[in-house]
Length: 122
Image 1 (cartoon, rainbow, N blue to C red):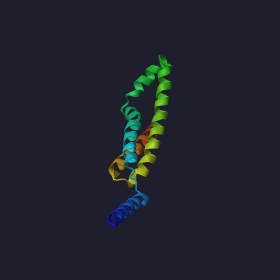
Image 2 (image 1 turned 90 degrees about the vertical axis):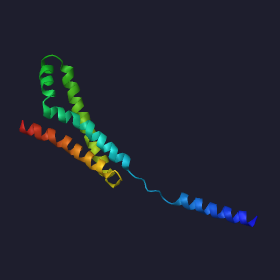
Image 3 (image 1 turned 45 degrees about the vertical axis):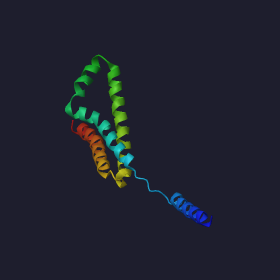
Image 4 (image 1 turned 90 degrees about the horizontal axis):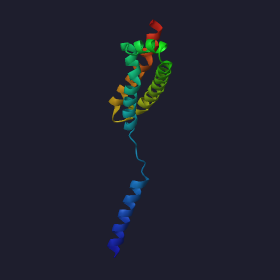
């Protein structure tokens, strides 16, 4: 009987030690989310640079004003996604998926800077 109580106390103390120790969380989800948001947010930038949207904008000026509104909202949503991805990437740098965070930060910075440079030049 005494042996069972001793084993119980040892098991209980091991369980309480495991429960009271703070667990370190790995923000790898933030790093992956940064990469995904960087890819999605950079699509309008890539289309802008390749000149794929430009003919549609010119056509929309004369035929479909709704398309101009949609393209404007697409750029605004893209800007918000890129900023969010940049912040998530910076906070995800401490994760085990650091490379994902660096790639997400790079895509977000490129997606934010290229349109600014493009409109300053043209």
